[in-house]
Amino acid sequence: MAQVDTSRPSLSALESILRAHWGFPAFRPSQVPVVLAAAAGGDTLAILPTGGGKSICYQVPGLHRGGVCLVVSPLIALMRDQVNGLRKQGVRADALTAGLGRAEVERVLDNFRFGPGGFLFVSPERLAQPAFETACRAMDVRTIAIDEAHCVSQWGHAFRADYLNLARMRGWHPKAGWIALTATATERVAEDIERLLGMTEPKRIRAGMRRGNLSFAVHQVRERHAAVVDWGHRISGSALLYVRTRRDAETMSNMLVAHGVRSAAYHAGMPREVRDDHQQRWLSGELHVLACTTAFGMGIDKADVRHIAHAHLPDSPESYIQEAGRAGRDGLPAVAEIFLDARAPEEARRHLDQQWPDQKTVRKVLQSIANQLELAVGATTEDFAEVLLGPIATSIEKPLGMVRKSIDLMVRAGWVEMETARPGTLCRWERPIEELREHAEQYQADSEMLVLLLEKFGRHGRKPWWLDGESVFSSAGFNIQTAWQHLKVLREKGALTFAQPKDRAAVRFSVGRPDARKARIPAHLLEDQVREAKKRTMRMEEYVASEGCRARFLEALFDPEVEPACGVCDVCRPSLPPAETQVASWIGSGVTSAELQRLVPAMHREHVRQLLERWRAEDKLSWQDGMFMLRDDR
Image (tube, rainbow, N blue to C red; front, top):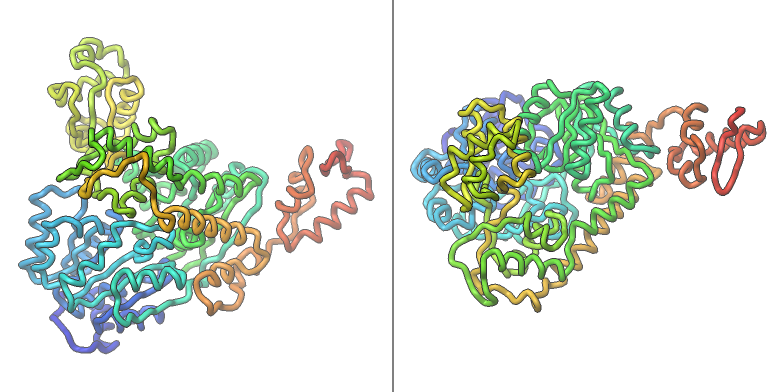
């Protein structure tokens, strides 16, 4: 750690820290006002573009101010990446993640309570734990950094209820300097961040989101799967393909592999070991394309991503900017593209409807939780208890995501408290142990896995038991990915069931369980939020239909001072007019005028109109039943 320095910082002093630990000769222009403000103490809100070097903006001030820099971060992957990066620069850093045992947590807390300081990364959920509060109050915390600060605002695209508890640290460390960082914040969200974090006379620093090396493009295609295959063949360098669902991630990845593209899937439904394997192979360059849901990306430090593609309409401009901004962080040219077919807008609206429950659904989830916990109306629970989300989704016939959203709304309404589910996989035998032992050979290729699990966990009978998959499987000589496939088959065959942390929630009713027949989520938490989400989807529909500069359109949503046209997007630098063979392929066996207009880029519609007129004059094109059709004898 650098020597404690509480003087007003000079830029040269901060640059000397930057050179000593990171080897950079100077800050980027957008970083200068942020590091100066944060190192001086007080409150700072920094809105910097994705890939704009936000980490440096709290790490250098944290070193300058000395003591402990407490960093609140939303994802374990993000924390691990930052901790590893700081340690490589010779800086003390550690993280409290859900996977740590009690002894390890106490060790980390003691190091920061009695040690010389450093960077301590925690999730927002950690702040609600009394043991952490006690230890944190005893630390010499001089800087508090809130990463992904837009999560505090219910009007943002990634609200997290646990972020609402962050302001309580004001009372723990009233003299600490605060810096909140985000890549996307409208004026409304920025004001929300400052208010909810209790900021006093904050310095708000907004850098333009424009990155000259990143170009945007939208492709209206007839069939997105074929377009993605073509994209996979023509791109070079590392790439990410964002899709909407877990099934799409698997389908798109398998399709790319079948066409000779080195690809794999990544989504939250995979076992952690499999996700980590795919991620590592992509980071190392073994995989060319990672087909992923939005579960992937935040905190991933890969500077040479050349291509980002979306095979769906993104949910919001905020999420799109975050995901597209993961390309070209090394400053070299990169492209962010969206591939849309005629089904995309309706799919986006249907997806939105599936994300937000109605009041009736929330009440059903509340009743299902009460049934699992055997909890009467008005009853309270002293400790957090885990509930399984899968059975709730099945019983109310709704997606798992809607169950999670319902619980989130209950937390925000004050009906229930929630904390991170215990790490590990919770399992339960679905059939009598003796029956499973006697007929293990009937499970054929999966029998060896079944016998292993029975030897280790058969004593539990029908009671739940915890599985540390990585430890158990590796010690038995199983390939991790193959072992999880065996486990899934055993579940499908009814031998056992299992639930990972993402499939569970730890809840507590501290003020009395509401009556599910009468409970109602306040309008500002539900109906108003649904309207706001629909507005964000509408903005994306306007973006893909826009005939102006792509970068200017996105910038105007967040910053009143918009830069000139970018000169590199598909509108500013249009492709050549489509060849006659391309237009013929669009028409195919028949196409409506509206569909053909959708497929033709706006700047080339006059060219195509003239081509169609010529074809009609040459009797190569006909108009039948509202469809353009090419004659077979053309």
